[in-house]
Image (cartoon, rainbow, N blue to C red; front, side, top):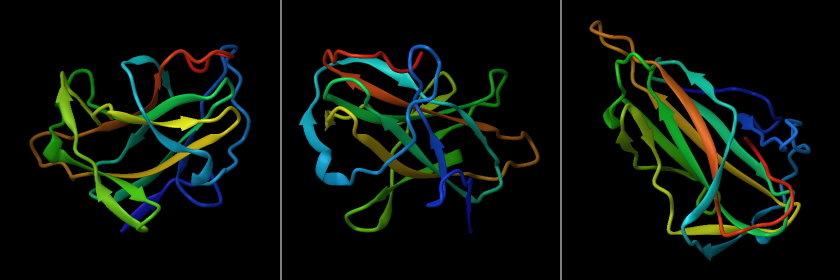
Length: 176
């Protein structure tokens, strides 16, 4: 069974970027995949943290969409998902959660491997990003399942999506 947090007609939660002034970026408009193409990525030059959301440990798949609108010049970007454990523990292990990404080309959900460090699970920063033109949107659909906790300890998870920025784009700075 899949549980979707609905903030869009298409379903899933949308994590929206904000401008440096704290205002929410313009509403999402899907530009299709033609405007976004793969590009080699250098070392990350920054990150745009998007709003967090808790996920229940109910064993059900929770869908969410990572949304980013490029309001600056064209730049290479990539989504990254962090799954945070409570500060006091218990800490999540990769086997406690299942993260999947929706592949638009195949219309299938594909598993996303997670790495771990100090109680945070995260997706690796990719070797290639997506060249996102000015004014274009990046929307990536995910679903996360947190396995039900045993009697020993309750597992809690918080999704912290972010956008990895590559190179030196000019124009407004997004996020905080």
